[in-house]
Image (tube, rainbow, N blue to C red; front, side, top):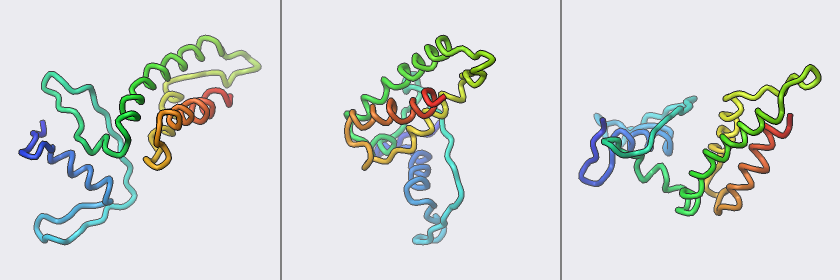
Length: 143
């Protein structure tokens, strides 16, 4: 497990942050040399901190206001409930065979949500509009 250093950072998380923000790494052998990394995608998962689990650092949350960071936690259960209700109410029939909803639909909603930039999401209303009017409509209602 990565340890927290004297400045309150986890070195491994800071390396990932540097890669995400700067698209590369600085060399430890040759100070000032920068190695650019291209054509890379990030896949990550984490659990709630506690019980020896260290949460993500400040860099994970610093791009969005505290209001947004707190508000986004309500979207996970809301998305799951919407998905479950949709599966129950929109059953597939021979005429509507495309009404098959699975976990891939949940991932499509979150895929769109995760692409938002700070400048595009400055308040709760913007985030709610993205979730409801854009991503949920695109994935579920457009069927």
